Amino acid sequence: MSLAFVKETFELDSITTDSDGNAFAIKRINLRENMRHQLLQVDLFEDAIPRVRGGAEERPNVELAISPYPLVPTLMPYSQGAPVQSNRYPSAGDGSVLFKANGDLFPEQHTDFKQFPSKQIASGLYDAFYANHVYLNFHLMGLPDTEYGNIALSFYMVLDDTKVPVLESAIGILAESHNAMCSELMSQGHMVSRETLYGSVFPMWRYGGIRPEHTLSASATGQFWLPIATTDSEQMSTTAQIRSAVKQARAMQPFDASFGDKFPDWLKFMLPAGIISGEIRDAWPPTKYHDNGNLMML
Image 1 (tube, rainbow, N blue to C red):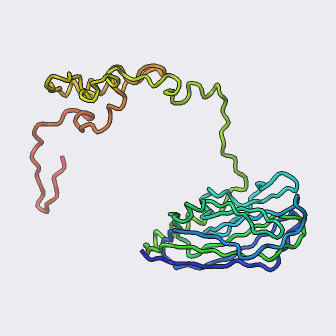
Image 2 (cartoon, rainbow, N blue to C red; image 1 turned 180 degrees about the horizontal axis):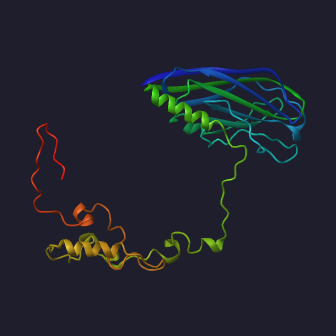
Image 3 (tube, rainbow, N blue to C red; image 1 turned 90 degrees about the vertical axis):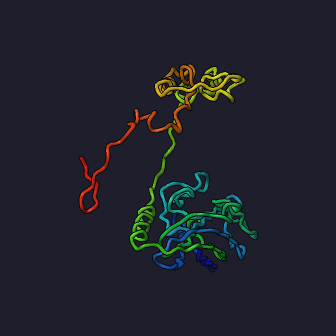
């Protein structure tokens, strides 16, 4: 493990929004090349109280993000209320974002940031990337053509750098550069109705999880899935009998019927290869080799 500690500041004495009320700023931090950087810890601190314009109903909002490449503003709104704030960064769960924090700017007060991952998780991250740099992204959303200022932020990052082959590094950088090309509009939810959900999903909550009688009996621990009595010695089962039990367990059943005719549905794991693929030969034919030691294939 080779730890790298990055302490960096982000300071702007003055920043002016455009006609849409947006202002963007970035800062690049160089890292070692041909490394897999695993982001272990992130901390954010506001060093000064920002200079805020406008009243309580017009207070600006800010987005802060750490990413391998500069974040591209999207066409999605940050707030649809008055004033409308548009062109927010990609969501925190996007693959191009390593860390993100949002906050409201109040006059004469420190900003109360809401961050992703949370403060608890941010002290033990496991995000990995291959780019030889990270970017601090800053987005302020306020009144159009308005000057704000006294932005002073400090970042602390702990990275675990691991040397990797050049090919792995190149492929990783290529993937990250493609992730940085974010979608400008996202709509990922799939609308369903209550009628659609009935009977279309796993139905145990509705039908009580109907199980075969063998799994509900008091002697199930002793029987497991073989039909034996609790006080008798176990009888040997033939391969054909076991295959028959597996077939019953794997049979398709109606959605409100028992999971398997006689044996439970979980009777399909950890089975010997001969039970699944067929009988195993008692004696395999002897192998023959060429003079160079290669096995003869027939």
